[in-house]
Amino acid sequence: MTARTTHLDGGVRTSVQAVGAAAKRGLGNADLAELVQIRASQLNHCAFCLDLHVGLARKQGVSEQRLDLLAAWEEAGEVFDARERAALALTEAVTVLTEGFVPDAVYEEAARHFDAAGLAHLLALIAAINTWNRLMVARRIPAGSTEW
Image (cartoon, rainbow, N blue to C red; front, side):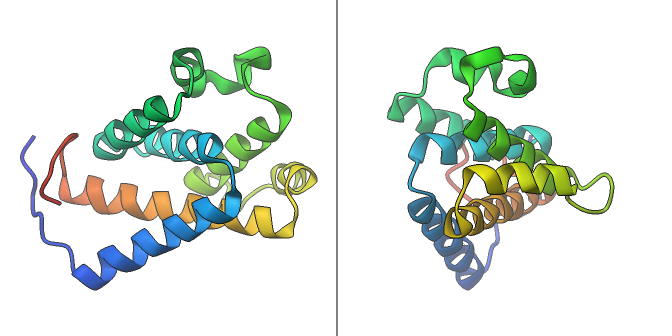
């Protein structure tokens, strides 16, 4: 695939990177942050972001089993704990928005597992990766590209 354009305003790039970095720090769980970013990228079909975040997850030591089963996390049994499942459900609800909103039950389950600050950081991380997904997919930035 050839990129449509690699132009991205430096201020936009820096701002979206800053939001993502602050959200990851605030979430305080690097493995969960990568799982959330991978899941959103799967849903958005963003090869660039999948390549990047799967690589980062592997470097952090996230198991191959967890990476292999992430697309089917709801059926993966105890591979993902209740907190991770709540975060992944929220990721899907925010990313897809098929009903035009995030269902109350999904939000409330996430709120049971995250305090107010943790939930705010999780939502910001989901928003940031969705922004990156859309920027990369719209411009057709291929996996592994160094020009973006």
